[in-house]
Image (cartoon, rainbow, N blue to C red; front, side, top):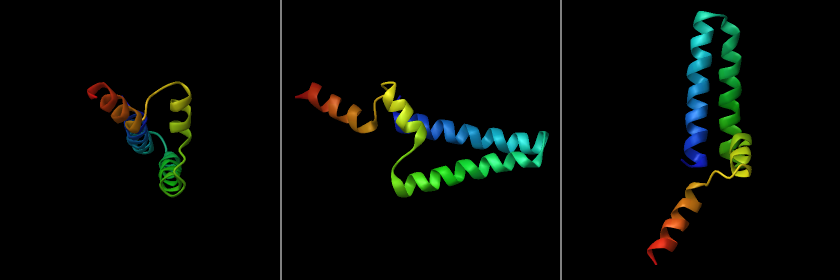
Length: 75
């Protein structure tokens, strides 16, 4: 599992969770959905994602590292 895949999985899960909570509990949960959307938007422009930074610090490899490691083993 790579950083990029985990970020997509977590973002999608949080969006679905907040949409469900907005229907079952309170409409204000849509604010959490908006926060996730804004975070994804700024991440697209700045190439910085708080979750990706944390995952890299704990040692989760990125897609590029996985490609480079598989290339080195083939040589």
